[in-house]
Picture 1 (tube, helix red, strand yellow):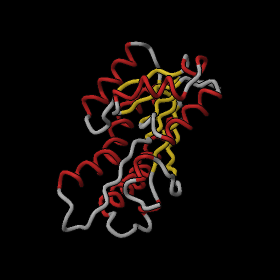
Picture 2: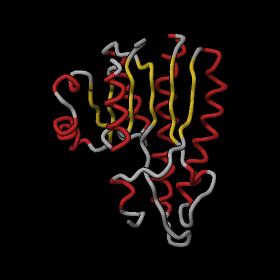
Picture 3: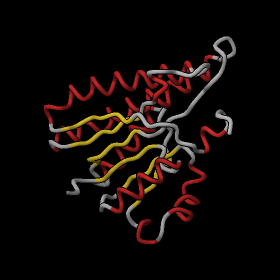
Length: 198
């Protein structure tokens, strides 16, 4: 049963694209959010046919900026668009030797992977509580359990997502909202090709 829209962050990446197509095939309209504002229209033309495109609304969004997240939530509310399914898919890597990593890189990795998950969950959980239904899906990584060398910031951020998901699931279960985390294997995409050798 379709109880509302799905919102996906990192929507125009490989995994985001696949999830978007799966959801609209099931009749669930999608709000696709991605920080690559200049690539949104090209992605729509390249990846979606005419019928699919009618089911997708795109928003430029930097998940590390809470004011951007809150602005999108406000605009969707003003349009009477209810988010029943939240997929916190946005993520980046930042490998490097610990003595070479600068604070800016560490900050960015933690903010995208962990703060973004928090900002989006906070922004949309209240309306899920009011509706008595919601599904939140977060993404962690095997690096949270067994980090490879030189992936400290990413491992820390994804471990944080695991802990936050467990806590959020307990907070929201009584309201008919489930919160789950996926720990996928290695998915080759544009964001990882530069840091994983062929």
